[in-house]
Image (spheres, rainbow, N blue to C red):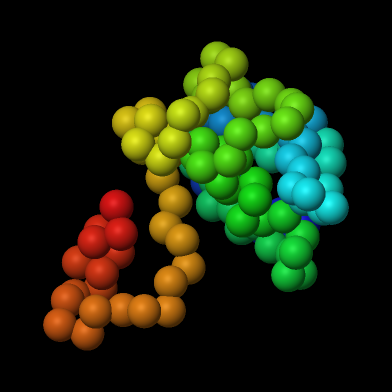
Length: 119
């Protein structure tokens, strides 16, 4: 798993603190170490992509971030404060949400309605 691209929106951003930091994240399932020491920093004004092969841990990392999975080790800092989200609702209330890849769209809905129907 790696960051494919990170676009700097402004030069002054370089001195800003990360909005979100995941450090030393471990997550294991029976027989599988999905994440080992994973890290991610998200800065204001940047557009980022998290890419990797199937099984690299991208979805697991996002599920740890949003509280769907509990991390086995590591820390999550949101706005500089150690945080643990207890599920998608608590992460959304803090301003963090993800849209899971779904192939089943509802044809009668608009794109926006399809996106928000999963919330």
